Length: 201
Image 1: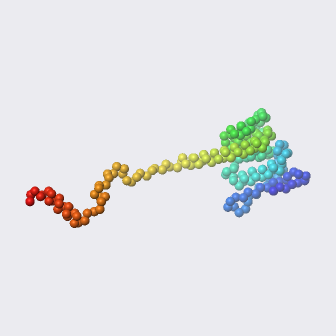
Image 2: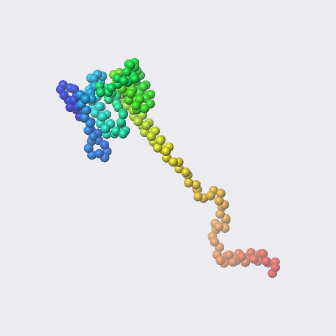
Image 3: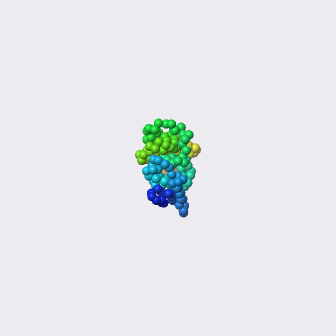
């Protein structure tokens, strides 16, 4: 939501961030006097730049654990960011920013590259898009590494052995059939006795 002061310069920008389960949105308001910059995109697109500043500040407030220390290139294009002691202060102006962004190993290194881009005033829409894409990849990789650490810390599960011995003898054929009746049992015993003692009678 914009408030414009004649003739055209924006005075302030406000972002409302709605979170699931939270009844009221978080509001973040930034003023051009406090958060505005000079030169570069601030001279060309001040409303756009101020709006992004409101969004980035608001999201860092709404998600402090996830976004603490993460900044957009627009955040660095302000007079409030002091880079006078930065190691790239005397670096050459011409840089392959897309390559540097792609080679950033973590979010901190990427943020430093963002500051360098802002200092050089060479930021383009293509470079900004690459910066945001790399930032998303690094955040996803960090989350994956955290998940891997949790998995490695979990104890290994011991498989449960089969309760039935693998080398158990097979059941006998007699045990698999029906039980004989008393009459059948007595007849079988009598026949066996006659067979064994038939010669003595």
